Amino acid sequence: MTDKNKHIEDFSRLLEKLNLQHPAGEDVKKHITASKKKQFKKTLKRTGFYSGIFGLISHVFFSLKKFGISITIIKSAALVGIVSLGAVAVITTGTYITVKKLSVQKDLNKSTGENIKINDKPDENKAVDSPTQPGTNTAQRGEEKHTDELSVTIKNRIAVQPLVRPFINGNVQTDVTRLVTDQLADALKKIRGDDLVINVRYGHQGRESGMMLIGTVDSVQCSSVLDCSYLIKVRLVSARDSRIILYTEETAVSKDEIPGACKRLAEKIYKKIE
Amino acid sequence: MFLKNRDFAEAYNDYYPVVFNIVYSKIKNIDDTEDLCQEIFIRFYHKLDSIENRKNWLMGALKNVVKEYYRRKKENTVDIDTLFDDENLGFVNGLRDARIILNEALDNMDNFKDEREKTLFELVAIQKYTYEEAGVELGFTRRQVRYRYEQIINRLIGYLKNKGIEDIGDLV
Image: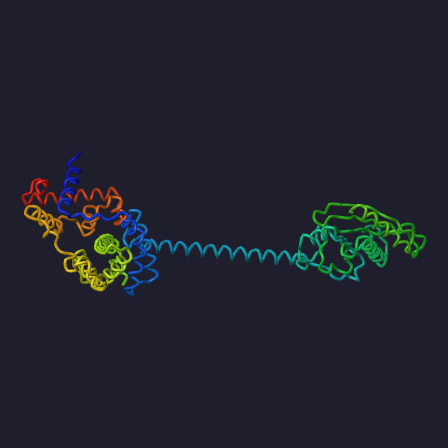
């Protein structure tokens, strides 16, 4: 045994012999350790000089002491201050980032909405109706509330764009192109239902479509100005990716036969997509 | 107020185990001990600025509070007046002298670096805390407690040698 240990042993025996030792019970020691922090808080409250901040500082102080960390109240206060500042910084930064993200998203939605315009009324004075570019979706966003069911409806809906005469040597009257457009749209509505067809001549009425029907009407074999056959060519195009779903045509031997031709076209379209 | 609370918290941390154990040894009831300790330390708080020797003051307050407790209880089985009597009276001749000498050594603050070391000694030597347990109470590691305790014992032995006691075994 080293000298050091011998001295400690001897001293302990001496204290015991002289009845100077008063060992604390194990359960008492445990109770003291467990209750010290709580008892301090109670005692200080009873003095009338307790505050929330000091309560927090003393909580840190007593907790760290338990782990054998030699800390003072001043250092505990500094620790609490640093952690609080850190927490404030994190919250402030988080709030700033969130608000900025929301604001950017809002601007994005607003500008996207502005870019998608609806032509509610067809231009009656226009001699040539220019075809609508596939892919420029003529839907008005935000008017239909999107659900899964509605998404399916939108996907299957056809927007019948106003048919036009061919750019080159086209000589069909505007009233004929309008007639073909209307008859085609009506024929499709009869087969598919009103909800799945939009006649864009009268606007989208706040509805979106997954497909567009565009085409031309050309007069062929005119025996007179008032008596022509009409070649109706149509393309059914995906609004999402401009993919051509169907390309077909029909001939109406006269103006009176246009409804019949449109009916046949509608049936072809129906057969393709249903 | 912050500075006073600071001093109070640090003193409370050091002295609470010692005070609690002594009070408990006299009344043997945990809940009552907690109440009495609160009373002792509330008085301690209000007198804090004027106290020179905190340990001695707390021991004095402890005795008064415990005696008041028994008077309130009108406890007949306990002789209140002799509750804290000097146990030296129970020893005779050599042992009494040895006790007196040792008490002197323990009361002499030159044998301790500071009040905290005295509390450390009280916990380890008198109340038989392990180094680890004392470390938990005082915010030291086990090694730090052991080192400081060894230093205290060396100083006490040095003090006793100065008194002519070459071997502490002579005291018994």
